[in-house]
Image (cartoon, rainbow, N blue to C red; front, side, top):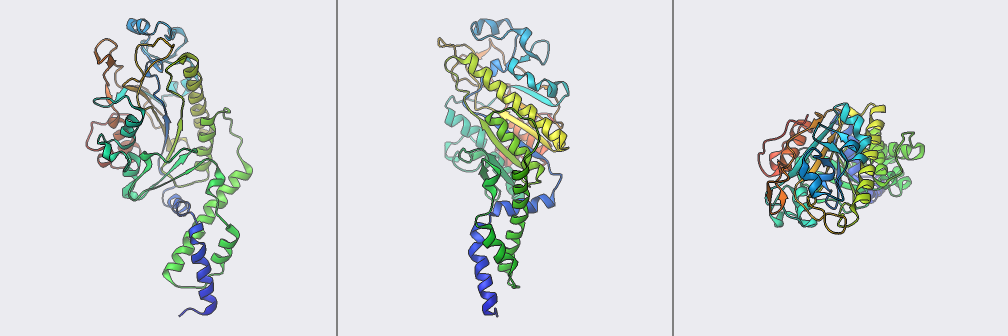
Length: 389
């Protein structure tokens, strides 16, 4: 039987339990379980990135005919092969490419492509085609379910469906302080003064202690910052925060962020160049930071968009919603260079190129070969995975 004093102390601890972030406590324990676990960072390029001016088949004469205003000069491109180059504003990624740490994958899509932003993104998020499943669980959440793993959205957007799972957990944050503890002083007092052998009370106490430890580490990062050099862009801020959380040892398996603005129906040239520069600069700084911290070997980055854009430019100096897109994978564990086949610009379906790689093949390779997770349930079946690692 509890004494009156113990009862009051236990009641205090139970009362503050809702203020203890369960995610933070679980991440703290996950760190102890697997300090060397591999991590996936996802960058969603929202709006439909123009794949044809991202991975450029400059040696194909049809390219210049299709893009009379928007064509990129071969001499300005970042060389991938003699026939294919990257947008000039992706030059910050050249060191990763030359070091064999950047995989370039053109023609990634899915059968019977949908040109709706919402529907296509839902397909990429869930790896499912039935609209009834698009508000359910996502490919990352499903993959993390067996180990009840953790993922983080870095940014202020709504938590993406891709991260939803039955047993896995996901939370969003835009700054380190978002993972702080509410009324920490009261919570610490209740936890430190507890004198009970009750299993429920002890469980809550352990949750709180784990969360305090993780919160203290993150608070120290917030106070002292870091000396890593990043561009002054939104995506760079998100990847800098991701790197800081990795340095702190937060036990999340997946970090997810996005860069918007790719719906370039008009005046695409300068908008797309700016976005390419922001993406490349942030990714290059991120891996330089992780390399200096001796963490790069644990991390890969996957970048995708919901679809590409029309191969023909429109009358407004832009492009419209297309089909197959461009995917990048970066990190020391990646097999660098060109993977797959550039789609034909002459053998078209409804005026657009056919995909050459099903996006579920990329997902399967990431989950199976990198994350060491089971892929079939996550992607809705068995797909011939690519050799990317």
